[in-house]
Amino acid sequence: MLGWKIFVHSVRMVFGNFKQALQITLGPSLIATALTIALFFLIDIPWDQLDASTGAFPSTAANGSFAILVVCVAIFFVLTMFWIAVSWHRFILLTEYPSGIFPAFRFDRILAYLGRILLLGLLMGVAFLPMSVLLLATGGGAFSAAVMVVYAIFLIVAFYRLSVILPAAALGEPLSLSNAWGSTSSAGGAIIVLLVVNALFQFLVQMVFSLLAIIPILGILLTLLFSMLVLPLINVSILTTMYGVFIEKRELD
Image (tube, rainbow, N blue to C red; front, side):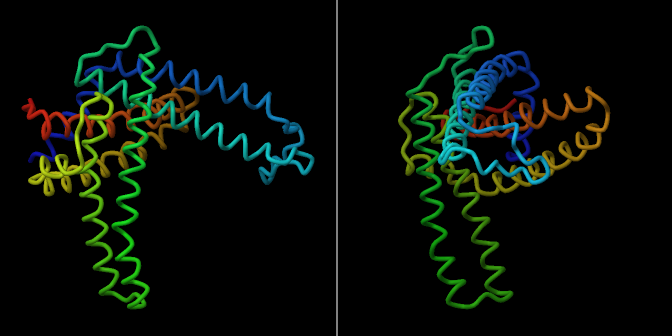
């Protein structure tokens, strides 16, 4: 039941603080959008010659312009995403309320968050290598596929167990991987339940709002609201709740 309680608490966290959710997400998103639009004007690409049928860039585009565009947009996206995540963690765990539509931009915490994301990604990549070698050595087959699935589930659970270091990074609290692993030693079953419930919830929400998208204006706005604000914040809230439960030993309502 713990996995279900974490999920319900995370959903309630977003809808119960919807005003703050809008404040935390709106400002950073507007800045990222404005910077992206400005970049379109600064990059030397003749957008009026874009092939609408294929989406291909014109051959007259300056060398490297597209690469610069992609890199800059990726940076805007990452900074915005982590700015929102850090601000949300701090709001929930430290009651650090946003001021207006621009939450505090804590660059050091954002960099720490990014560093820990990269660390977790590196660890998962290294952990997956033995399975890749095994698959290559055995040539696949039903048994290898079954082992692969089980191992993938183990890695996903391991990732979530270790991911409590992310809210810690947002707060500026030291939390090592070993401490994170030890603190979540009994969380394996709860995490599996949590992931299944969250996946089903996100699938159903996406399906419902995909149908609502046919409604002019309102349907599109609701779809954008849930897909770009509510669902991502629920995922961030899951990490926030896990940190509160397993690290700070908070009780769920």
